[in-house]
Length: 81
Image (cartoon, rainbow, N blue to C red):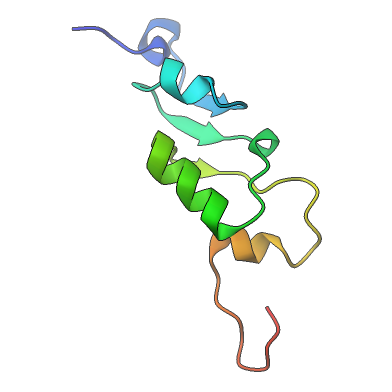
C-alpha cells in the first residue's frame, strides 16, 4: 500500500498553492490557499469538486463583502449580504 506524503512526513495535510499540488498530493488532506485566486462560488466549487480539496481560502484581493459569495451565503431580503 502506497502511503501519501502526509503519512511519510507525519503532517495533518497540505496547503495547495498552485494547480500542480492537488495531483501530487492526491492521497493527503488538502486545503486551497489564497494564491488559487478563488473569487466566487463557481471557482470554490470547481477546486473542491475537481481536485477534491477539503476547503478553499478566498482570494486576498476581495473586498469586505465579497468573501460571502465564495462561501455561498444567500443574500438577505433587503438585497444586502
